[in-house]
Length: 193
Length: 163
Image 1 (cartoon, each protein chain N blue to C red):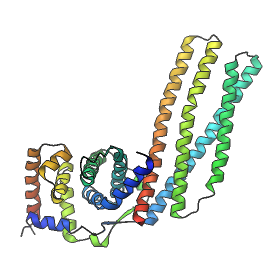
Image 2: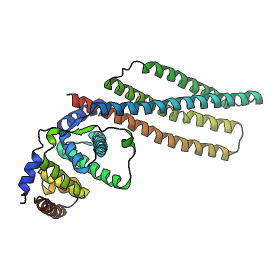
Image 3: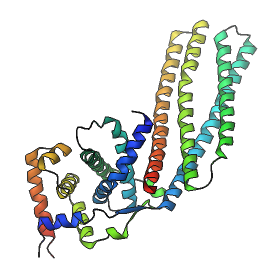
Image 4: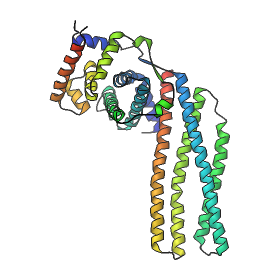
């Protein structure tokens, strides 16, 4: 016995008005917690690395300048900028950690926590990306004032350009992760209605 | 369009038309993990598509266009790569409802799944009552090509329905 196409259509239409799928809240919660943990670890490491690199490099440049009794003002500005960046990241980290305590361990709480973490990651990566611009400008100016060969400045700019490009790629990953979480939140809110 | 407006439109579309997305998800993926992945992929694309929606077509047609194109691309990508991320994330998000387990419907989805990715789209659109012209427009193929493929799909489904 074969079915006519109209019968196939009737079978297909029988789905109307019936919920095809149900959302498993426990699985959703687990997924959110896993995303939150992953974002937490990445943010934690990025912050620590940034603090270490900026404070370390800033102190190093300052020490070299002081030892050489350099008169290159841009080198001092650069070390000052790096030290300030390191301190800024440190303060932001303390504020973030303080803010983390406000979220409860419910599904909604964890979701908001994950979104807040993702928002922080996006802002942080954007700030670190923009930070290449003043650093790059100060390096070039310091080289120029220090009468260094042009090719060193060009190489430096190429290196900074590549780093800026790579950080844009990283930033887009964070932005897309944040969007995924926001969509998950919307999906959840739609399910609840 | 502000992000808040986009969010509002997204929630409205999702609450009114999520059945449409589920049908496509079910037609293009068998495993629960794949269904989760494809569902997520489709809603992300739907979200991104909101600012480009110009009311030149109905919301349903727009959503079919976005969802089917995403499902086709996803299928091609899946054939090339093996995913690991979703498997690491543990249990699936979507569970098939008891009410949707109708043997004949399961059979129909199974047969649609056996078609290639373009034919799957055509089968869904045909069963949803779209005209050849609309199907051609949605999938970017000629109307005559749609006609040829539809005749073959219908024949195949009817033949397979032999018990």
